Length: 100
Image 1: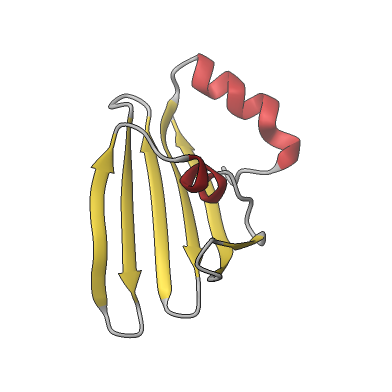
Image 2 (image 1 turned 120 degrees about the horizontal axis):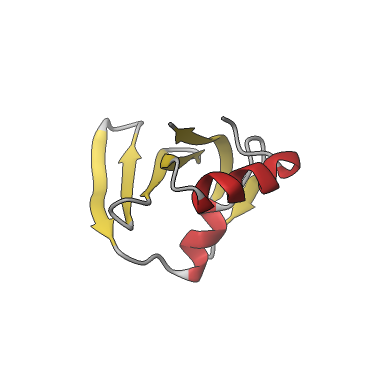
């Protein structure tokens, strides 16, 4: 399911019934692809940042918690734009929720 404002109540229900397998947001800047994935059963976020111009992995890490700034990235809807504190502009390419 693509995350959209109209489906917020449905999403809350999926989380309450523990049916969400993972939730993922993919962002793109001029040279970075930023993937954030939350896995509720593990209560863990996987973060992958790749410089797609150079074809190099910049970051891959798993975290129990994410910063408030990272939460802003994670809560974007497909098509949203966001400028970070480094003045990099990101576009949300996808925000999906996979469920049972």
